[in-house]
Every structure is written in structure tokens, then in C-alpha cells.
Length: 86
Image 1 (tube, one colour):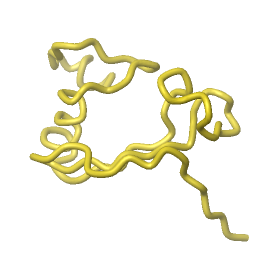
Image 2 (image 1 turned 180 degrees about the vertical axis):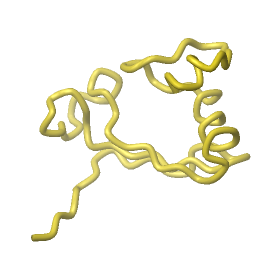
Image 3 (image 1 turned 90 degrees about the vertical axis):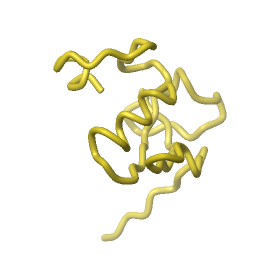
């Protein structure tokens, strides 16, 4: 999103790290930037519920949203468990 703003894209609602994305930001990501479905993960902890699992960095939480062009958010997962392999 910072790249879009730096290139002069104008949003009705300001966008920067730590603010929740508005639907116009989500639409920009799926319809203009990536031009395909997008999975957003690791949201700033300040904008999500207190009970969400924090990541190791202490700044983000394990949450995930799936966005589709022309539709918007189709799935919101509040606590994502990561699968690791050894």
C-alpha cells in the first residue's frame, strides 16, 4: 500500500502501517495491483481483538483474510496455526 501511495494513488481513507484496511484498499490490492485473489496475513495487533494469538515479533497477530476481485473479503480466519516441517 505504501508503494501505491508513493506512486501517487489517492485513497479516500489514509493507509499506513497500523491502520485497518478499508474496502477501497482491499479492492485496490485484488483488482489493480495483483489482479487476482489475495491472502492477507499477520495483522497489526492493535487493530485486532485482544484474544488473537500474537506472533513472535510482538507486533502482529495470526489472522488471515481471503480477498477476491469483484467480491471482496470471502473468508476471515481470526487465529491461524502455522504448520512447520522439520
